[in-house]
Amino acid sequence: MPDMNPHKTPMPEQAPEVRSKNFDEVALGYTEELAKREAARCLHCKNQPCVGGCPVGVHIPDFIRSIAQGDAEGAYHTIRLTNSLPAVCGRVCPQENQCEKNCVRGRRGDPVGIGRLERFAADWHMKHGRDEQYKVEKNGHKVAVVGSGPAGLTCAGDLAAMGYSVTVFEALHAAGGVLMYGIPQFRLPKEIVQREIDSLRRQGVKIETDMVIGKVLSVDELFENAFEAVFIGTGAGLPRFMNIPGEGLVGVYSANEFLTRVNLMKAYRQDYDTPILKPKKVAVVGGGNVTMDAARTALRLGAETVSVVYRRAEEQMPARREEVHHAKEEGVIFDFLSNPVKIHGDENGRVASIECIHMKLGEPDSSGRRRPIPIEGSNFSLPVDCVVMAIGNSPNPLIRSATKGLEANERGCIVVKDNTMETTREGVYAAGDAVSGAATVILAMGGGKDAAKSIDRYIRAKS
Image 1 (cartoon, one colour):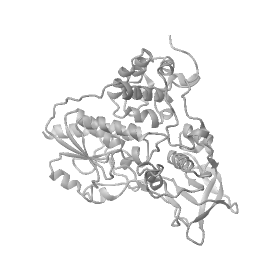
Image 2 (image 1 turned 90 degrees about the horizontal axis):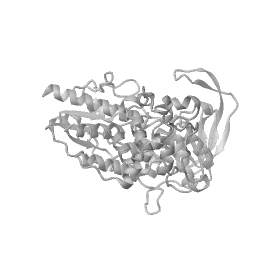
Image 3 (image 1 turned 180 degrees about the vertical axis):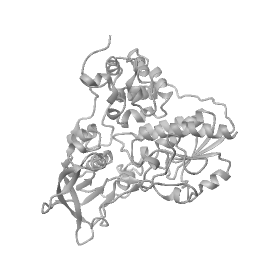
Image 4 (image 1 turned 45 degrees about the vertical axis):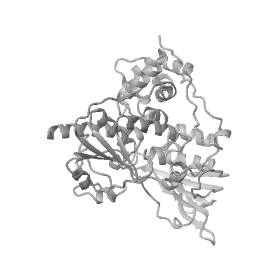
């Protein structure tokens, strides 16, 4: 019989006053006992609504049953049937808006902690399981994957499992994309990401770094080098700014630059000499997960005060509730219904304060959220020495501008056909943030899986 406890089994985590001063992972993960307890809450519904909410179709009730029976390794291999990055997804996937949102247990209490159980199975395998030894017969066909973020890694892994020879081209010096440069160590340890990447290498996936496609090589040259199809998963790495006075002052960062310096370039470690300001008073502008990441990172770098400036109300924030909760526990201040209008500098050209205006909510806009409207004469200033702009990103235009026949929409996103992920250039497929704009890791992975299937059909039809 299922355990009918209406509440999720709590996840052990570092105390706020401790974790806000280090970059160690906040959530400590389930023990085997806790995982079994949570797994026992699953009803094993016949229609499996949770699976329908998963963009990569993980067999959720099956892997949870394995955990309940004490078979964590079996659970891991069940997840791996459809998910190439289980340890990553168990940590950063917005399960509350996907699989857990559809969980029947959520109608009268908390849904089953699917993400927590996925993480448990992946972590158990990393500690106790054997590295998989892949023996897949090659089919004689080559595919190029541009970008090593979640979309690219997923597409590469699925194609390799089908027998394709896959080469991933990554512009930076380390593979992983946003998993490496964007998400902080305290939410997603880089060692975890590296283990997932190493697993793909054992599948036979070749990864070449420092390869800027569109500069070092073009898509045309990839085809000339015997690649029969190209997948583009270059993400959305072009930061947006507000175009207000003062954005050129010293101490103003895009969230991309701020987090890349800390995460990928290890600015938080004493044994690295990566240049970065160590601010004392920080304002982070935005309301998404990246905003929470930047704010909590600033605290860990030693900031005395960190304020999140968001133009809407708290209930309209797109950030995960868990991340907002953790940020509040750690001491982040929230200035809701506020919007920057100017950044003031000192005589040396450095940030001295950020001027904001109070907002009120009007009628809903195209996003369905009530539109924020400035309240005239309500301006106020926050004394800060650093401002981080976390208001979104757009796809980098480099690869599409260097590729003939590759169309983009008005937002700069690559245009694809339906769910095939086929672009307007024959043999070229794309998915992830390069297509959708900034979204989630798991949605990018889902797009990568769809693209792999389409590439397989395309090459088979030509053979």
